[in-house]
Structure formats: structure tokens, C-alpha cells
Image (tube, rainbow, N blue to C red; front, side):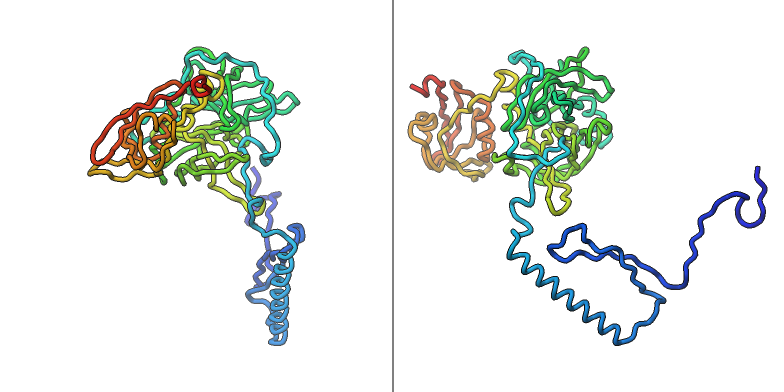
Length: 438
């Protein structure tokens, strides 16, 4: 043990000491560049003596004010002049989307690469089930313990020496999971990693680039943990939500973030197509693509897909997810047929929101009926109110479309109408493709 020498520190101990030169306080400040100047021309820190410093004469003070005034005038002038030659600072091109598993920004002009991942056959009876059932509200810890085992890290070999990393959600105990199409686009091989670290090969079942959804099946051992999917139409703005994913890649897999539903049914144009998405402020980062957006009951209500960014400033809290309500038909078509099947046409134009037709009964008003359509042949008339479809209450056009989305060519669908103070039921028959062509 070294001996204390009474100087306040041990022999051989090195102590850094800061000694002020005097009572003068020094504050560093940063000056913004003039408008139009490049960022690299930002002024260096300038020391400003604010307390206990040398007093300035009135003349010096006046000179200082004059310089400031000249700089302000020059700045305003530069802004006006630059505005004549440059496009406005904020325009449609100044903000854009990027897919969360990519480290670079998404280029909408770049087509998806061909997927050559080994395949698994469709039509094996697997299905995604979306339920409208709630349990008790869970804590964040409970949500994580419940859902994280069903979240997989998706590793995609792009065949050129590079790889893509995303997230997926297992919805079937025999290994089917859903992710974003852009996660596996261009892939030559794929593996899925469970939260335990176990890695399994994954085979490509089917995908749809327009809706940015893909279904794969991992070849695991025994029954696998699954996540429950709930109806996203039950969400309201302000609801608590969570996201689980792999921000920045494999090392941070299984990261939980939280937030709220910022908006529902948000129409967003991405890659030239308008998508109806859930907006959330839960943090989404590179690698979160394909991961679950989870409600406070521990149920998946969406698949995280994109966030918004800007060329000029950092934008946080603007993430978007594909709602489970629209996923159900897409995923099940991919599982059964390998591609989306055309949805039948009703042949009516209706109000977006319902109207009370009598006490306790809402319906959406029929604005027009297409001649020769299934609705026209079933006897639906302009001015009718649709109050039910297939036995379910209808209070908005979105609910009507949701019921229609469960049908295919050749099916029948019932509508309950309110006409002149009474209810009646009609049956629509959707023609097959052969009947439609004839």
C-alpha cells in the first residue's frame, strides 16, 4: 500500500486540475450559416465574454450593433435572392419514405429484385386468422414475454455477397410467418432466427409486391410459438401500441419500443400507389420492417413497413404499419392460391359514414347503383340505406368493404336494406370470371 503524503493525493497519483485564468466566464456559441451557405461553412465556436469581462465603450457597442444590422440585412437579401433561383425549401421532393430494413433511402424508381429463395407449396391449409377479441390490458413486460417468442429475425442472402435483415411474425405453429415483401426481394436464400437464437432455413411461399407482404415457412422442430392477430378496425387514435423488431440489424434483435396510434386509415402514397396504413409514433428503425405492431392486449394489429424522413431535418415519430384488417385476405390468398384473387364488385356508390335511420339503427345511404351489377340485379335502389351485410351491422363504407373482401367470384352475399321505413334483405350473386366474360 502506498503511503499517504498529506498533500491530498497518493504518491504517483495523477490528477487533472483546471485553473481558471480569472473571473471571466467563457461561453461557446455556434452561429448559423447564412441562408444558402453549405453546412460545412458553419462558423466555428466563437468565445463570448459575458460576465466579468472587459467593459466595452459606447462607440464599440454602436459599431457592434451596426455590424449586426448589416448582417441581418445581408441575410434577408441572400434569402430573397436565393429563393429566386432555388426551388422552395419544402416541397413534395423534400420528404420521402424509406423502408426500415435498408440503411439507405428507398429509391422508388428501382424495381424489386427477383426472388429465388427455395419455395414451399401453396394450398396446404394454413390460414391467418384475425379475431375481434380482447382480453385484459397487459403491461409492457407482459406484452414482450407474450409476443417476442413469435418474432423472428429474417436474414436474406441477396446472392451478391450482401444480405438483407428484417423482421417477421409467426402466425402458425407449423412455421408460417409474414414479413414485408421488400425484406426478401432479390433474395437467393433465407433463414429465420428465433428469440432463443435457434436458426432455421426458411422457404418462400408467396408474396405481393404492391401490398408489400410476403409469406414464408421456417423449417423448425415441433410446434413453434405464435402471435395472435386482432382486428385493426377496433383501434382508435390514442391507443397504446408496441413494436418489436431488429433495429440496425441482428445484434439488437428483439428490441421493444412503445407509443400510441397517431392516426388510423391514413392514406399514404408510396411508390406510386396509395396505401391505407396505421400511423404510430412508436420508434421504427432499420430492421423493423416486417415486425409486429401490437395492441395493449398483446395482439398483432399491423405489420410495420415504413417511416417518413426528410432531406432537411430529422423526423421522428412518423412510422406506419399495414393494418391487420387488410392483411387477412391478402395473406390467405397468398397461402391458398399463391397470388391475390380479384375482389368481386358490388356495383354501388355509398356514403362514407352511416346515418341514423331510426333510433339505434345506422346505415349507409346508397348514392347510385350501376346498371347490370350484382346490386342492381338484386334490387338495390338509389336512396336505400344498407344497414347490414351477411348478418353484420354496417355503419360505414369501410365495414361494407370488409365484408365484401371475404367473398370471391361465384359467391353470394346478403344485404339488409332500410327502405321507406322498413327492412328488407336481398341476395347478391357475384359472377364467375367465365360468366363475366360471356
